[in-house]
Image 1 (cartoon, rainbow, N blue to C red):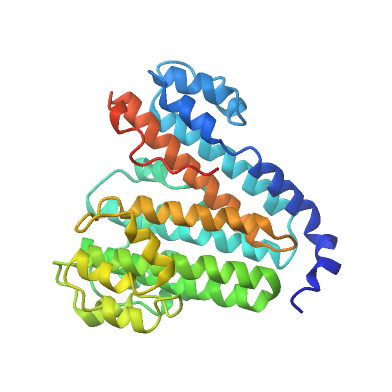
Image 2: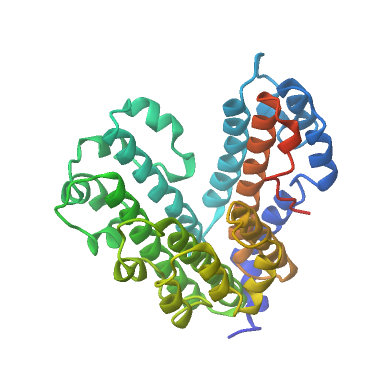
Length: 351
């Protein structure tokens, strides 16, 4: 059916696609970022953001401002936009939009469980959770002592249940097991989302499968780098990689045996799309890898808007807005801590 979706797409999806393209035009430009990087105080940042689409969310905030307040209000705008789209969506777009939030659900579950392990206050942890990943029984996560209880008492009634059921052990929850749990859940989630997008077919399948494959490859690289020097075995590492993507399966075999950053680099340089990422980094320089991946992701997300009559624009918009919020958080932190010389280190320009 590829190519024929233009005939029927606008019946249910035309209004929302127009809405999301309108939202995209409100993203901050390079000129906005240049102005924000010149700000001396958080009040200056607020004054500049008041002239953008963040204005209604920040204008009534009293001084003194904190970085967390700016990030919270900017996230609130994204949540409002998401809820508006969700209210208007029909199947299969509504399911597609739900899938986008599952990653935040996994992060929230891990945040609560890790915080409880270190005896943090549950209410304080709930305030730090991402609003797009909230679900009714999230507060009761604190009572679970091991993964079996976590599933039986809480997660069985959430959309994460199918991902979790394949990874239930009676092991106690410690920092290592929680990280393995996070990556296992993400693997199951990405594979499920990938299959769902393939079933949708057409331009949605083509663009989304490419974006999700990039996400799977990035996670494989991060898992490899973060597990170097830990007790995680090569087989355990391989089990955490998603079963799709440009690196699957031969790249995964090579990544599983890597012992340092330069070996990871040698594996990735065999794949032309990732060669350009590593060409920006000098040997042994792993700190800037995240930024290089984010820049590549932003480029791919912007390209999603070049085609019409597909759902990938919703995924791309939400990811771009999340990147914008990360940029604002970094700029605000640099200004608040008087580290303006580092303000460009982690800002990823979207346009």
